[in-house]
Image (tube, rainbow, N blue to C red):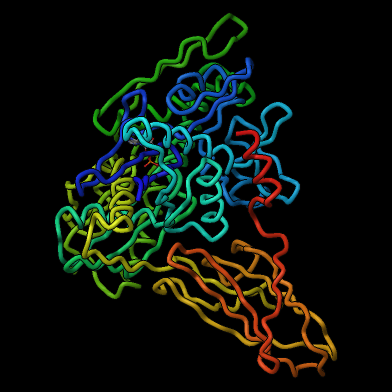
Length: 514
Ligand code: AMP
């Protein structure tokens, strides 16, 4: 068996690792860095830059530099989250022919899968050059809170990059695996993962090589980007107050201030005071004007406290659903770049007590865990068992925009459950079922995975057919649906309609372009 690549395809940065001599190791990129910015830029000269080169030119080419594409993957353009991003992102988001959120550069539109594939392909090339062999298989990490459409889209991205996906795994679970395998720990571990786009909290029980996820919770709409947006708005407002100039329609200025906001946030993780200096940010009536101000860590913390407060509820939910209290926890692992912020750490201590483990690097833990999982698959690592859960309710849409839940969140995976459907009219030949996944009991607030047409129902009076529909979630968290008419025993065909994701034609087109 060849090498299997462990991939953490992050919102902001990505990281890869493999097993070497039975140990997971991070592979540096060709530029020598252990993480690679998840960015792709298209220049006016027709060149494509990926990673650090894309990041370096972002301020002068904002409309053609794509970042944070993980926030779009597997989502529809009319999704409320996507709509809220449209004004925040300097590049254009457009609906694809089937309504998915795509990116448009000049006259060419790209699926988020295709953009992600460009990043994965670069990571794959780095790994191949490090290992001096072709790599064709991978284990890829996704946020625990990714729904089925987002998981399938991530798999498509890896496949477009030439990698067969052996497993899709939840990021916090992988971080715990990397940590637990190293320390052979026993007890309850919480993984607190605050990255660029999402927040996940998982509680695991570790004992003798068995890792059982007991509960997972989180917020798909809370990450470093949201903190940056608050700081950006503060800086833009300060500039407007001082100069009277509104920069919001100047994309280059917006990008410069956005970058300064992120830098300021990162600097204030280690310094107690820092400065922002952006010369020639705009042109006023009296000539060029500059943005220059200083900020104390305390000021920053006051600015972002409403976002910090949002961290509590998912942690409390996870503890409750795991059936333990904070006192029962042995260790808390911090994952994701945002956990470097002192205010995030002190909030973690307030919620869970003083249990932060310093044994993992927040930028690398997920990729290392993906490599451990690849080592389990490849037979290099033995005696490790991983039991994960599904983080979202899976159900069907019923009358009045409601959800009838079929598989409850925090059920161990793989799992399956069935429901019996019938007809409402005599000789009704088909039944339509809309499958939804999410936290809410209101269907329109959940992700719509697709509509299934249950066809070829034998002719019978209304209410007579008994069609059993089986919903399965596999170990990757991927959903499949199967229908059987009970009286005839026939498996009915299920035709997926309006599912999010790429059609085989779109996949072929993207493959040709890559
Ligand atoms: P990740 O998705 O794990 O790569 O996390 C990326 C997020 O972490 C981005 O929002 C970064 O701005 C943020 N980040 C990285 N380093 C730091 C730091 N030293 N202090 C605060 N935030 C950071």
